[in-house]
Amino acid sequence: MDRRGFIASLIAGAALPALPGHGFGGAPRMHGLIGKMRAQPGQRAALAAILLEGTAAMPGCLSYIVAEDAADADVLWITEVWDGTASHEASLALPAVREAIAKGRPLIAGFESQVRTRPLGGQGLPAA
Amino acid sequence: MDRRGFIASLIAGAALPALPGHGFGGAPRMHGLIGKMRAQPGQRAALAAILLEGTAAMPGCLSYIVAEDAADADVLWITEVWDGTASHEASLALPAVREAIAKGRPLIAGFESQVRTRPLGGQGLPAA
Image 1: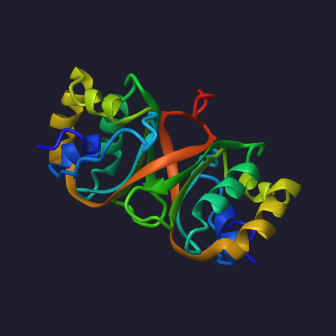
Image 2 (image 1 turned 135 degrees about the vertical axis):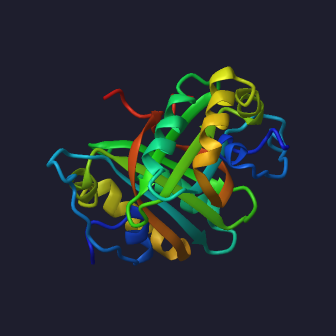
């Protein structure tokens, strides 16, 4: 399994292609993920709790927000910002994350979209 | 124009339906938006700069992150978390936001998706 994938997609059993972790100039850059996950019917709240519990202390994680879709009762959105691909990759070996993967997987119906981004800045990120 | 829409969709001239700003119990809840915006060819960096400059000081904004799509050179993702719909709505009257709307609109080819969410928690949000 691709260890660079979303924590969430790892839980779901999906995978993403690898991307370089550095810009053309060699400077590290932020790494972002936006994922849409469908829970098994009625399991969204339980799945969200697992995703939040397992991700409370991840080095290099600048933002990790779990949100309900306002229009679809089974959908969660997970938006992540990391200080680079390496810290994201390393997070997947953390015991709490591995436990979340094991607990969350049976509650997931599917991963409907997953987008890689390069966050540029904004509010809610640590000051550079 | 719907004043509850994305700042970004307001710039693009799009609109979203209104949603209640409180949960069933009457408690205020967070309000989130995830938007995918396509810039005019070659204009993504300029558009991103406008979106970041105009949104640096918005009361009630808990997170506002502008990110490049890693796979599509003209696409930006804007992810927002607000302490409720009222502060989001109020932000659209801020002079800096209104200026960003005017400056950004000509650089936008289209708004490809926009999702309303109810953020539950995570990293990168102020402590409750």
